[in-house]
Length: 191
Image 1: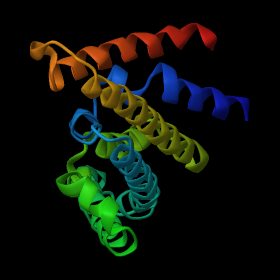
Image 2: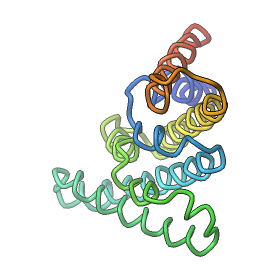
Image 3: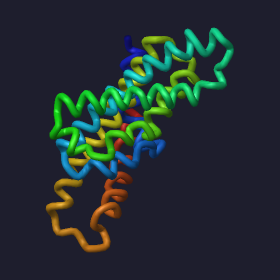
Image 4: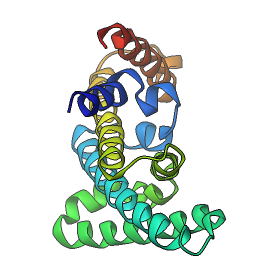
């Protein structure tokens, strides 16, 4: 239990995938203008990462390994992720049309979100068992969502503030992400 908590804390805060590997920058910069959109995107990414990780884990071990076609993992994982994102898109369109509209083009782009593919491939590369795979997938997703929510809150305040013209939009966003990265990495001494 302590190992799972340690792994979760490390992945959420210290080795946050957005702030250490700079993966998932497209949705971070694109959907972070409003907190409500960021929250919806965070939940959608969490659901897609967890669901696609579980499916790809079992497909890899029960099909690809059994038939000795592990080299097909990238193609198979991309197809699974794309199908899962389509499911989420249809689900959101039916259940929450307002959230579906606010996410706009970024919802189908979850398919190409490198965080999702990275997590599924990393689960196989690290040789995780089922509980480690689930912990890894949830922790990375929660870390992504926390950064997205904190960043969107800061960005809303920056948009309301009088910032110099050269720092409008993505310039101040990148500086903000750099400071967030420094703050999160300072937690390394905790564990």
